[in-house]
Length: 280
Image (cartoon, rainbow, N blue to C red; front, side, top):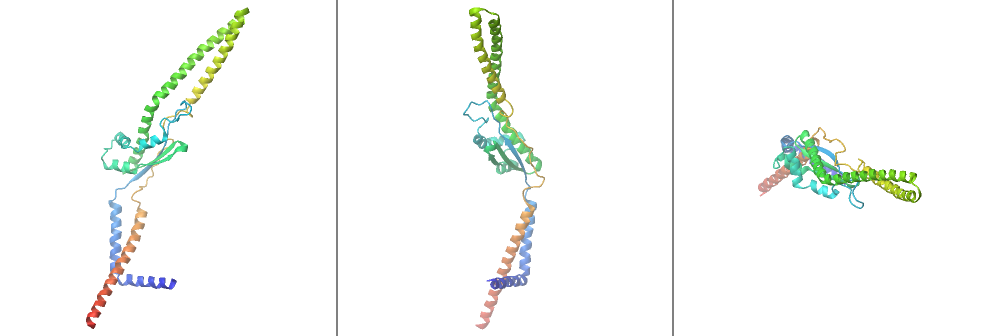
């Protein structure tokens, strides 16, 4: 088998040497087409960023604490309406080539366990790619801000209500404490019973207030954000010069060899035809 392969390679080399003009011409044409493709193709840059979905720590038990369910957010990002809003926010016409590239290149990598989405977008310049990535996050932030505005307002109203009730309960507690200490007989005993009830109410309200304050803190309640800066490498991602030249060289070698073999086969056919004609 090794000997057969060696003979085949030697024969191939002989064919290439004999038909070097066809080999070189075909290879030159393929390499020129590769060069033309690299220079005619419009360069593209890619930007990558992360979206941290906002959450509401004061959501009722058993309900999704995120401002918008994770899957619904993914579906929103993929809608044409959302993408058009992003394009309009940066002044790109929705029917422009830049818009088509943005829609075609928008890639989402969901990480539900981390409540994050990684997005990739492409544009015809490094600056535009970064701008579109930032706009994608900004538009989603604005939508989530509108969705979460009313629940957040209600949570703050509830906190103010609890604080007001706590203030009143503490005033009643102080009054009953004075009556229990200064009163006599049945009045003192009644004040003591009411004071115990007031103490329980104050403790319950303090616990409710502490729980609401903790749930409204940043580690439980947060807006949709971009946790890290946008990653936009300086080099273009398309066309990839190294990959394109590599494929061009391989294609040139294959097609040039094929052209040389085809030309040699044609020569042999003509030679056999001429020999047959002379013999006849």
